[in-house]
Image (tube, rainbow, N blue to C red):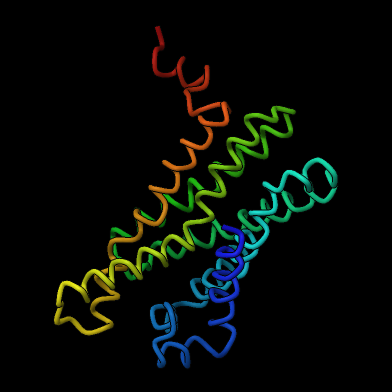
Amino acid sequence: MTVLSLAITGYFVGQYATGSLQSLGARHVGLANNYANRALPVQIAFYTHIVFAGLALSVGPFQFVRAIRRRRPGLHRWIGRTYLVSIAFGSVAAFVMSFVSEAGLVGLFGFGSLAVLWAWTSYRGYRAIRQRDLASHRAWMIRSFALTFAAPTLRLWLGLLIGVQAVAGSHATGQQMFDNAYAAVPFLCWLPNIVVAELMIRRRNLPGLRLSPLDQAGANPA
């Protein structure tokens, strides 16, 4: 997981550091063509997301290294702070980007939901550690990183779905096969991750998802 996270970070950030969005879009590099002629705030959100999502993905796995948590607690805290600050910027930028996603309404709802849940799970992890609730902190950070890991799983799904089209004998062009695959990933890239995360949490006997007392009171005002 760590190797894949670092590899995707290097590729994800590096491909957009080789030229302007216009030049990269002309070469059909990544999603550059979709953002090359967008308004400046959208382009700023695009680059903000690349940098901070890449940083969160690269430092995230090290939060779970037991040796660091036990022997270097100060380093663990700084990794956590870097991770949370990165998500604070990266999630807001991702939410802005969801409104102009190439996947249309599916992208808006899929990537928009991912951005909101990414910020929310990370905040809950931060709040839990501030309350000295270590078990809940671990559970929420597992959920948070499962959503951070959507970047690698998105690319795995893209490769798989493009491969399926090719094996099935599709007559679509390479770009058309990419577009078909990309239309399916706004939810696929993170829903399975969060299911796996919840299974991991339960196997470790950590607190599962449940309604808070406030939520329960709201659901049953009597």
